[in-house]
Amino acid sequence: MPAQPPKEPAKPEAPASFETGLEELEKIVKDMESGNLPLERALELFERGMKLSDTCRKQLEEAETRVEILMKRAGEVQPQPFKT
Image 1 (cartoon, rainbow, N blue to C red):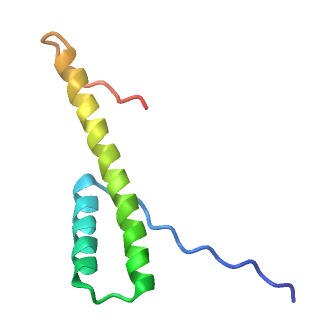
Image 2 (cartoon, helix red, strand yellow; image 1 turned 60 degrees about the horizontal axis):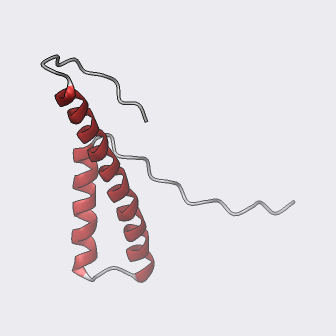
């Protein structure tokens, strides 16, 4: 039987909302601050936290851009899709 390649760890999904991501990030910080984690678990949480932080930052930047677009319209407040 041929050897199967090692499975990659499952990639956590992006949070459903900014608030959900922020809550998960806060929980990760509390868990890591406890100091009671094995090294491997601490590294996993750190990696997940960095990804969540990046996702939340991008969501905030997109929201800021949408607000700027709305404010620049002289009195005409019409939502416009955000183009990446």
